[in-house]
Amino acid sequence: MTEITYSTVAAAAESIEQEGHEPGVRSVRDKLGGGSHTTINPFLRKWKEARAARDESSIDIDPAVSDLWRAQVAKAMAQASRKAELRAKEAEDAFDELAKQMAETQAQLNASNASLATTQAQLLQHQGLLQANEREMDALKARTAATVAEADQRAERERAQAEAVRQELVRASLRLEQVPDLQAALDQSRQLLKASHDDVARAQLSEAVATSHADAQKQRANETAARESRLGQQLQRLQEAREKALEADRASQKEILRLSTMMSALDARCAVQGAEIDRLRDAQKDIGDSRDAAATLTSPQYD
Image 1 (cartoon, rainbow, N blue to C red):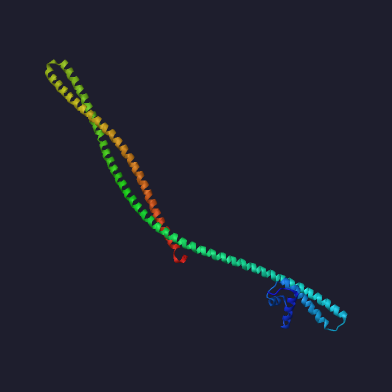
Image 2 (spheres, rainbow, N blue to C red):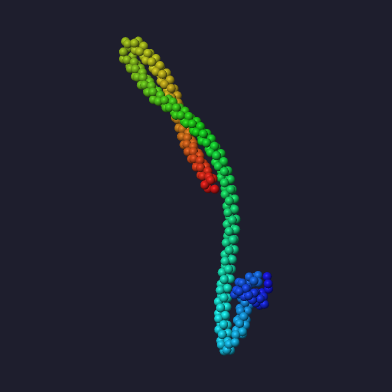
């Protein structure tokens, strides 16, 4: 680039004028191959003033008119120069602002390209994660199905145990129903024993009153005594049977309590198993829904 001086600017302006064009800051700068507006403009203005003075000196006019003309020309040139400088400054500011905006736009474009590349990489990574999640959900679905099947089998076993306990309760209830019959037999034996005592008393009284009938009364007394002995033995057996029945009743009550407790525990376990089965089925359904959603996200319309 040529050094920017008055001589180089004047030479460039003369060359442009000889080519039939009016020299300007842009054309002079192009001719010199560079330079700023603020550097070229003062030299160019000085050259134009010198050219105007040179043109005026070649005309033979009245000095007063010449002075007035030069003053008017100088004033007009000064005004034009100020306007030109202002427009040049505005143009330079606009150019600088445009260059700044272009630089910012380029930076934003570069950032957008980098963000796009990052997003594409993340998308590929997410697709890989979705595929891995799909495989994991398939495995989880299989494990859940196996767990549900096992829970169903366990619940079936619990129901069978509960049914066995119910049947045992029925048998225990039947045994308990026999206890009132034993109690009735015991009461009847007691009544018979009391009747025997009454018969003995009446026999003894008859023996004391009627000696003539002593043999008959004695025989009757013996029969009554034998009957009383038999009734006593029967009463003893009934008492033993009653004790056994009471013992069986207490054992049955304990068994009923134990079976009731077991029944409650089994019912609770059945309820827990049912809730667990429902939860596993809901989880299985959620896995299926998640798998469908993942398949939708990886479909071509989301690429």
